[in-house]
Length: 135
Image (cartoon, rainbow, N blue to C red; front, side, top):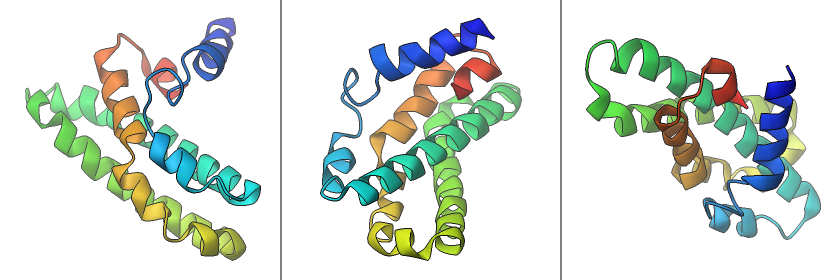
C-alpha cells in the first residue's frame, strides 16, 4: 500500500503530466478563466484519464498482446477514450447540469487531449502492473 501512495505522490508532485511532459497545456489553459469550470474540467479529465487507463491496460494485456495485434494500440486506445468520454459526458449531464453547461463545449475536446492518449500509451510502455497503471 505504501508503494502505491508513494507512486501517487510522485505522480502528482514530481512527474506531473502537464508540467513535466508538457501534455495537455491547451485544455489546461482554455477553461481556467473561472475556478469552478477549471475544477470541473480537471475532474472530468482525471476521470476520463483514469477510466481510459484501466480500459486501455485491460485491452492491451488481454486482447492486443494475446492476439499479436499490438500495432493497433493507438487506434484502439483512441476508440476506448471516445467511449469513456461519452460515458463521462452522460454522467456529467445527468449529475450536474450546472457544470455541464460551461463544460459542454470542452468535454468532446477531451477526446483529442493528448494527455489522455499519452497516459494510456505510457502505461503500456512502462513495466506497470494493473494497480500501478491506475495510479
